[in-house]
Amino acid sequence: MGNITSINDRKKAENASVQYANAELQRLLSNHTDMQAKNEQARLNKNILALINTFAGQSHTSQTAHYVVSIFQRLLSLKPLSPIMGTADEWREVTRSGDEIRTFQNKRCPSVFKKCNKTGVMLDCIDQDGLVLSTDGGFTWFTSGKMLKHISFPYMPGEGPEEVFVEEKDDGYTVITDPEKIEALYKDAVERAQAREQILK
Image 1 (cartoon, helix red, strand yellow):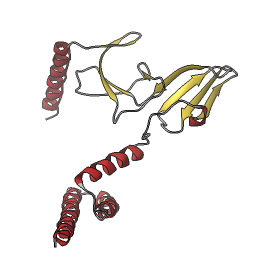
Image 2 (cartoon, one colour; image 1 turned 120 degrees about the horizontal axis):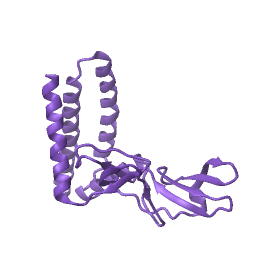
Image 3 (cartoon, helix red, strand yellow; image 1 turned 180 degrees about the vertical axis):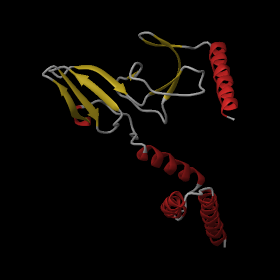
Image 4 (cartoon, helix red, strand yellow; image 1 turned 60 degrees about the vertical axis):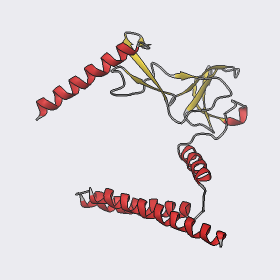
């Protein structure tokens, strides 16, 4: 009897998660006024519900559900599940500057690149998705080739980029760590954004 109750409870939970997803997706669909966008959203809703139905039918516990979702998110984001080691089999050559500099991309983490000299000695290695920068206290974020995340191995990419507060200089950026200065920059950015909104009204 206990097993039957457990199965029924699990089925109810599965149905509830599918119903919840369907209701939220329908709400998203109803927000579209453009017919082309609405049709595209309907197509995507169908694809999303197919994935959710598959997931709901796998009878996960809360623990295994969290684990599967976290793994799924990393794989869809092309992030490795274990540290990349920098070994020869992990790289493919993407560009060559004459006979001097060769650039390689990591096969397991496509955002990671290394530069080597003609003898194969690594000169530098970066994760181009490893940092996001803000000059306005976190009001907006951006990436820049002037400041990149230099890495060594083994390397495990995080779930998202590292957020760095910076101040722009002639030759690049300097890092800001003073909380009061960061807060002041953010407050100034908010006030400027509000002023622009008032002008546009």
